[in-house]
Image (cartoon, rainbow over all chains, first blue to last red; front, side):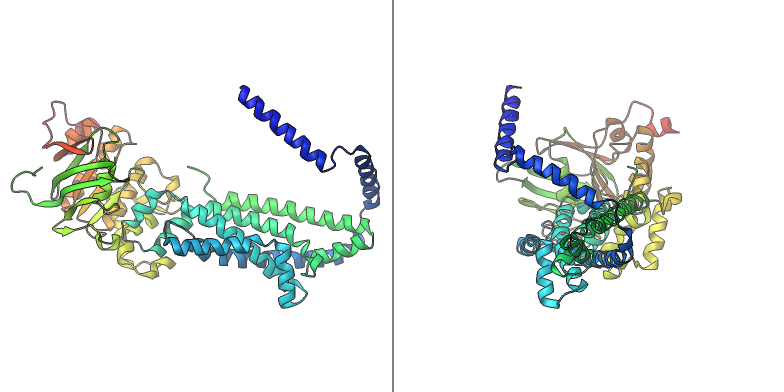
Length: 253
Length: 248
């Protein structure tokens, strides 16, 4: 008990020091921030829905980019994650595959978008590749760890039937991991929809460009409509995820 | 241990030593012979090396010293594909893929004979026919297309047997095979095993901790203690009524 109390006090003290360093206890600054929040909020209301046709088109582009980028990334992540699975391949192969996944993951999605804007020019193609690249790095790591965690008894039992490595992937790793594979894919799609809404800031297409224009021209009522639109899409994605999980995943033991 | 005189030997273990970590011996100089077409049961306290011995027999582990022969083929250093027509293996938790149907799980018994077409779910018609027949033999034809996670413990056990039978092995190695089932169900499943052993001339080696089942079904018993064979003998004649009668 004493040890727990000591750890709690130390963590609380550390948090207080970090917050102080970040200006959390600067009351004047906080008060100014609260006042500005009030002004910003009042400037945002009522939202200007006249921009919905323009924002809707941009949102559609964002959705297409997210959908295509996530699926491309998912498809590319599967072979990479299989190669990175240590109980299937020699250490040299799996380490190399894990290194590639880590290297791809190191670069944030916004930076990937900038790189692809340089490569392919402005527009949604750059955004789609940016999303795909980030998705590969993330999903390859998650899926490789998932495959490695597959019940060794199943691998041994199916392996003893004379199954090849590809057979094991097809009949053990993929179906056993199906729940987590689908859940992570849906999470990634939802994440990419939110993330890709800012890719337009660097000219990679989608809703970000519209948001940037409204921010720079101080048209906060229009910005509010765009944010509401994103909220609707995120809520719809939540509903879709729940439906897919209910429809396709194992629900009984 | 020598089997009953005149009985052909299906599996022979010679001077087997095994350690997961250097010099930390799990099995020490194990020698035994398993008679062909019979049910041999491996007994002994937990942690005594039964699972390790069965995995070595199935070719999943490689002996540190000594070797194992199945029908006069030395299995040490053989690929699992090469061994699949000789030995079938059923682990304690059965090793079924829960998110696939009973039929798909049983078809995995044919993977050693199938090429990459199976990756697309394309199995030869003869294999599908055999898989259905194996499921029927196990008495769960109505569960053929049911996903395994929806099946009961006993039904899963039958799927695991059907998968191994489709493999057409000469020897089946099973670890604590019916340990999670109630006695009546365990006896019914072992009766099916007995029929398979007799009809298909398959040799069964299984670890077992239930004395009643050993008395009822074992043709040959091997006792393992602290990584060594303590004794091996034909099972005692039961003084109690046969369990199959109790079930009926």
